[in-house]
Image 1 (cartoon, rainbow, N blue to C red):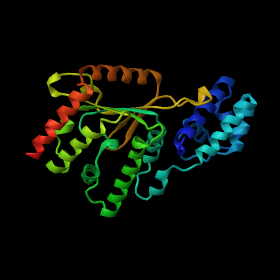
Image 2 (tube, helix red, strand yellow):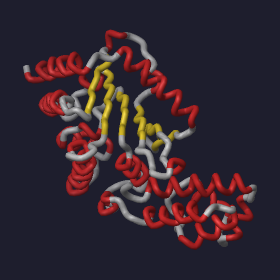
Image 3 (spheres, rainbow, N blue to C red):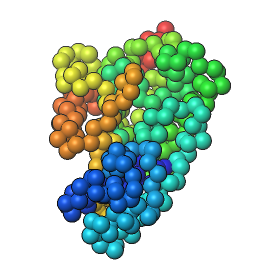
Length: 292
């Protein structure tokens, strides 16, 4: 696990489960560690902000009747949650909410993304990325933009690492290939990059042509399904998360019913998508149009 996001979420989820199984009220648990019920709720929901302490976990586990082994496992998560991720060194440039997303992305073993408008961040070329940043933040100083591009490069490193690279499955609406982000030369280079990187064994890129007509992805809009490795203690395994980015914020879904719906949506979208080889040919054909 890298960074504080996933250990914090694991710890909060297990503390809530133990409290509910023991029948202890949130108010009583909060009094035991001398915090407000709001702070306890933030701890249990894995949010950033509340200071995690081994003492808190020991007191709550004793109150809930947790076993020694379970207590030890949860106390160890406190230390994990305190370790900063690599992106924390870019804290002067990144928005505060980026910590949650980057922590989840870094911990995921498989990412499945459906995109209707833009190339997924993990596959964007530096020039394409700059163009996207300038669209969203037209007044940002060049130095900050370059720092954000650097973060983007660090994120992509997991795709190319020799051992256990992250698995990336990409479904692109055809319109992604036609939006001339950065101009014809930038998008042509971006499309050739997609065709090239899609040959890697851990990356799958498939296109949904506009000619297929209606499909469920037009209703779901763009999203990312994040799946995580199995933890040695099975109940600590992070459940899948669906991430959707908006203009003013982001949405994270992790309820079982929500995940099931998005997994079913992905299955339907995949049924109308071209295969990997036809998708590569499709992408390169459009790239050649920009070269003309």
